[in-house]
Length: 357
Ligand code: SF4
Image 1: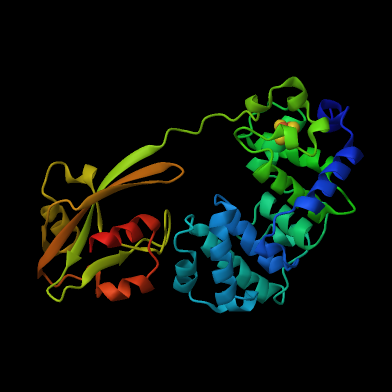
Image 2: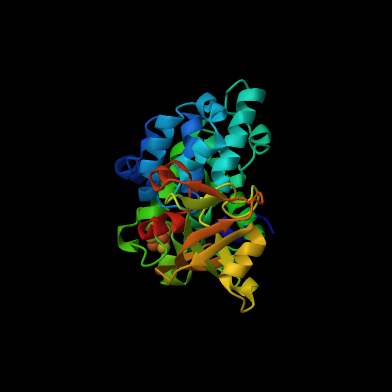
């Protein structure tokens, strides 16, 4: 059974395109990366927008483009500078991959972002969605850009109840949009779907009465828009508890350390974190001495906070501590004056802890 047979047999593709595009022309959001079709800006914006809301992204986008206005500036920057500009946006591997890929664009493609799928998808951090967004928005090519928002809109329009958490469902939607996308103006088409999903066909309580494509929508006709899309529940989020130590030396400087170069929040800085589970009932000071070779005295809890990632949750208990004696071992901590902390990139949870210093 083809996609046409399965989902599009009664769908008025031309009428849908017209209704969508004329609505977009009159209502499109005024977004800074839409001022021109510069592929580098489109690329940066699409990477920032993954997992992050438009309103949050806008100031970061301005700041990032001010610091790194071209691929050459980003390619030449220190990774720590890039992470600092990304600080607070989360999912830091996005920033590292972006810089890695931009360096490749400078070295392999003379600084020109490739305008074809084959070269684009070789670049680090560019998946099928980002590839489609760059090719359609910047180069006006009729390539689908399918993410959760787009799947929600089309699940409803075409009454598709396949689980959107599955990769094969994403493929199905890519095939559908391949059929439906405007060949005259693919750039506006994909952005119009993004805008429709963000402002009208929202996850909860879609504004069907004001929807420009209501007459094409099967879920609306059946009154089932709130039952779509179907998405299987993600795996249970695991909670890990830590004591976080803000250790001062005799000069009042604070201990920080760089996280490992791989994995979660790689290469960002943090106050030392002690996994409560590893203590097995022994004192924090003892565990700390075994790990870092430093004698400290931990003070009373000053605060606690929680940080939820996509797959784990950190429960963090913040304690002050005083350095008592160093045994000369080469440990991984740096003691830094409090006023210099702001020049290091920290994850959001550790930025929040600065208030306890
Ligand atoms: Fe979404 Fe409602 Fe429009 Fe259908 S009619 S596309 S459910 S907003």
